[in-house]
Image 1 (cartoon, rainbow, N blue to C red):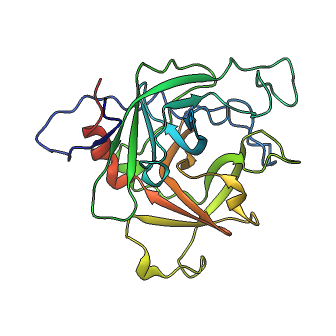
Image 2 (cartoon, rainbow, N blue to C red):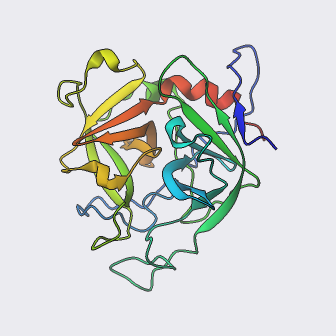
Length: 266
């Protein structure tokens, strides 16, 4: 079975199945009073680890439906093709995962899902997205939920004042195993000291107060924000390509929404 497949272009005259959730998504446990970098249990239930049995894990992705994980193309190549998706992880050093403040409040075990294949987006840009399909339906649980994508015109044009990324520390020595979150803000190429001529138009830049975001695994993971609504849902607007010192280079996913829909099957 071919693990890497080329995606098909979006055809506006074709009717695609509605497989992306619109309402039942982005519902993590949000603790607005907690300002520490450690996330709370159930706060980012859509973040996935891309795992290869021989090589370990190198990147993150986002659960977007019962069968698909969204990630960055630079996370997958002929040397690293994930064969497992890890979902429901919170603390790398503990199993089961429990709340720091309440050791009796514990999540179900993490879940492993086999990868059926990876769909590649082949556009003319340097940075692209990949869709990973699992061999079976992902069961949604308290610690495993899909993220929301900007499907409506209103969300596609929404620009939050700040965004959030999350990932785990790379160095396990003297650090926590709990997923860490970071507030980031839209930035210019001048702020990030990056030559704008070398940036494709689908790339977004963000700045952070963290001294070196490269110490954490963020690549492939979501850049998102809580959208003010009656349900306060987390919406993913971009995905992390790579951190650069105090900046984060990310890929705008809004132009890819139609492509994502065109390459999802039931």
